[in-house]
Image (tube, rainbow, N blue to C red; front, side):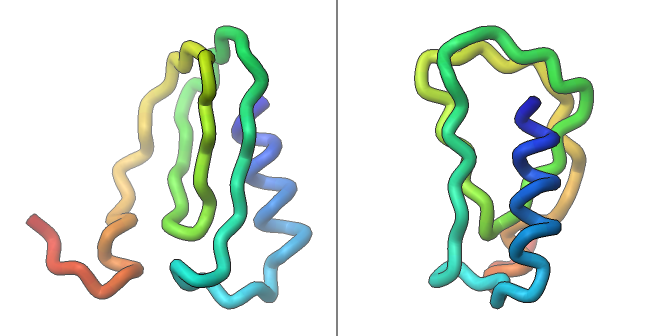
Length: 71
């Protein structure tokens, strides 16, 4: 699942500097994914390609980690 890939990245690189300069990417194969709730992180990119994603995006202030003011 996409959530499992994100969890694996976070556990493998748990000491990585979490900035926009040190990023990771989850590349999703074509298909349909039902993820339930998807937690986004500002240092993990998700490339969905030609996929269909059914998920609730967890309300997290991703922009705040980059020093951006909330809208």
